[in-house]
Length: 146
Image (tube, rainbow, N blue to C red; front, side, top):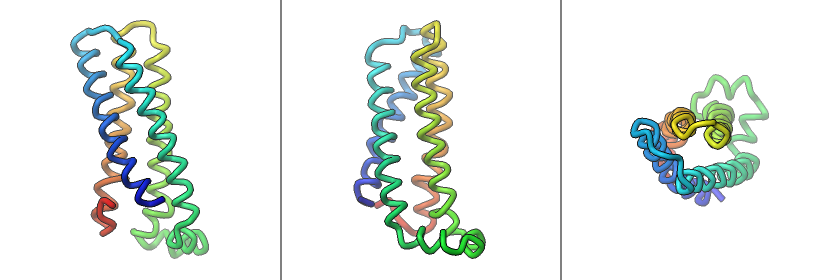
C-alpha cells in the first residue's frame, strides 16, 4: 500500500501541473474553458480522492503512527513522529479539499476567465502543500521518494 501511495503521488503531480498550466494559459490568455480543461480537473479530483483513501489505509497500518497516537505528548516533541502522525495527514487532507473546491468553483463560475482563474489559484496552493508535505519534507526526514 505504501508503494501505491508513493506512486500515485507522481500521477497527481502530473495532472496537477497540467491543470495549473491549462488554467494559467486559459486565464491569462483569455481562452475558452474547454472539455479538456474539465477532464483534467475531473481526473485530478479522482486521483487525489483515491490517494486520500490509500493514505488513510497506510496511516491506519503505520506502526509509527500507532505509537505516535499512543503518546501524543512525546510525538509533538519529536519532529519526524509529529510530521507523520499529524502534519502530513492534515496537510494532505487540506490538499484534497483545495483541489476539490478548485474544481467545483471553476465548474460553477459564470465566465471562462473565472473558471480558469479559480482553478489556477486553488491548484497552485495545493501544489505548494504537496511539494512541502509530500515530496520535500519526507525526503528531508530520510524517507526518500518511495
